[in-house]
Length: 363
Image (tube, rainbow, N blue to C red; front, side):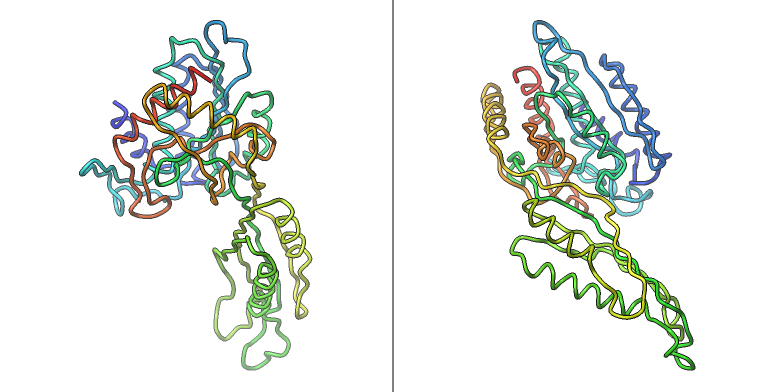
């Protein structure tokens, strides 16, 4: 049943920003969570609805602080990826398809675990499913922060480390857009009256590299560049989106302050805008204690659980940064996130279901 549900979920493609597709998928989740006894709330945004589902606790633990599970239903893949590029395929114990790893598999694991513990004593469970995680959760950050208040611990359904270890900390992640406004002119007859936005952008990107080079543990990726139109016109506009990763808050502040203070090299207009931000989630004794509890829960079902730091960012950055005991990586084992070979190990679905069920029923 778990694999059949995963195939259903993968078949409902949900690109980030496609509100219609995301909202249709949210309908499925809301119906299923409601059938499992949750009180479900929709949080509408122009790019797709977020979901908050509160499952009541059972037995003597019904009034304890809830466990928070963080998930997302958007993927990086456009509509048509399933039919044209990455068809659903099962072979040799491996399942392929867009979103199987990141993170339709995690959604199915959580839902199935909730089914399994429905009649057991456990804390309340709160589930937050966001619609724009793949672009940094710009519309969901405040929601995740608000729904984290008062929880006992937070867990993410993102993919684990390749060996199945959970994630105990994450680098900070910030998306920045640099926009340049120059002045168009004929590139041959009157180039002196023009101001090349592309030339200015190139100089600014070199400056960004110089800033980053001052620090040992900063990742910087220029992900997109746009600008200009014709080779016989001095380009009047250009922009670049840059992804930064930071291991600690002080480095993040220093780099982003320096980038915000960039000055034009020529008589162009320059703006720097932070598009999304996830602060660094650093290792902590609280997370170490939570990992010890999860290791014990895994031991009770015959599973060996480990944990290690991660460089990728997710919504668990927020809960970890807030000081909430947090672990991530409860999704299935696999590889190829954001790549056309995205895949999971089929048997890891049931293994992760058992682990998440043990976490809910024992922690």
